Length: 194
Image (cartoon, rainbow, N blue to C red):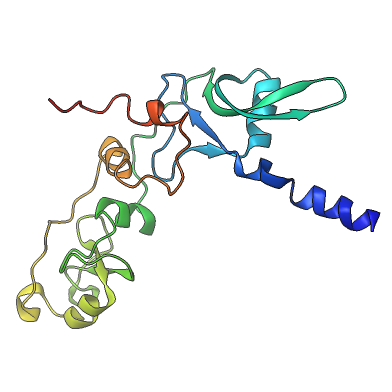
């Protein structure tokens, strides 16, 4: 019985596993918005102990070692500035983010794949300028035909997004859970409504 308790405690340390820390760059902006830059509480505590971050906000819960007690950080800011990448990697995720997770033919969300506007069978290449997010239905309908042959049109022409543009798009898709201490840091630089 004692062994069962110990293994359960070690594998599932209660609600402590549900207390991630929002990670901010030295300029107090999140490292990324989508996915939101979060660290498990253990990483945040370790970084604080190693003096790599400043703790900006905390949860009510504490963790203890034989010599210390520390409140679990909910927001940490890096002491050294991490320069954001200028180049956006051409990945399926970034493509879907650029197209706001919607089919570029009919606008539906979910069940997405990608489609070559100029089909590869007709010399089209796999690039930012020729690939769009598409639902399965539209992708099958278009097949290896041109837009004109398929009687379809694009909602928005495909193009290479900038890193800042992709970050701004990511802000439109907040995670399911936002801790109250995070809100001020996620949208502090957003334009205010008049």
